Length: 105
Image (cartoon, rainbow, N blue to C red; front, side, top):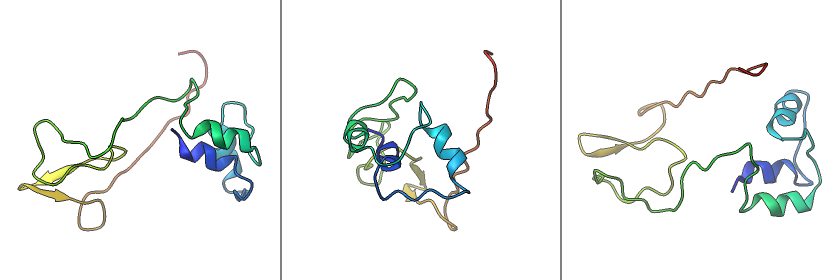
């Protein structure tokens, strides 16, 4: 499921000049706003431009982690000296970057 795309089609989603261009790129057809049918669709479905990142919850890794089951793998799971290291100022920092590609290659 992609709950973020569902949120883009919820009636109370706020569009601002700062986020509108990114929102248009986030949808396959550039359409967003009050579309309850799309909110329902994206709770449990993916469009062809998306991929499955992980399945399931309460995951046990291989090799097995020392910490408890991992809720979901939408972010990294890191252990240091057998203890989970959390994201944040005293842990690890996630940096996501992208480059927009134009053309067919």
